[in-house]
Length: 157
Image (cartoon, rainbow, N blue to C red; front, side, top):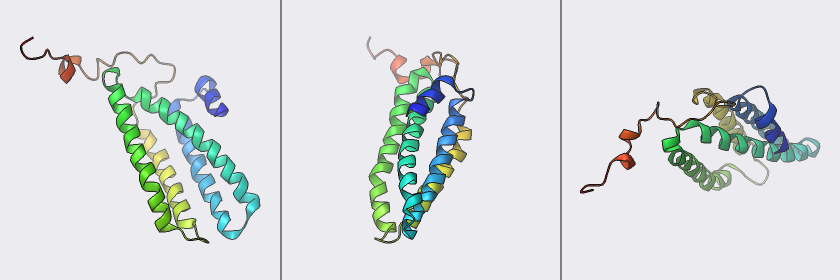
């Protein structure tokens, strides 16, 4: 997490590039976890600790990128929706794990995890512009406040 904080504060590249980097690192480390099935503990144990730390860094950047991706007038709704979808993934993941692994074979689940991290790294390119070092503003140029349902007066008011 300390590396993530330093990247947020001091790195010359943007939030999207840092998020993409952590996703690639998670994919590589997930593939390194396949060594568990071959009893290569000298690879498996460090990969386990490193993927845990890398995942924490990735989530820090997910919070930052998602929080800056939406205009101010819909930011809380957008962030809440994104994290609700993420929670559904955390509910489904144990069932996928149980259905794709045995006591000796974990490679299908681990490869699926790596593939999802690579897909996420690929999809980062379609996020809105990187807001590192830029003011967030009010978002009124993207979504006019007159079109939001909360900006209209109540009937009879």
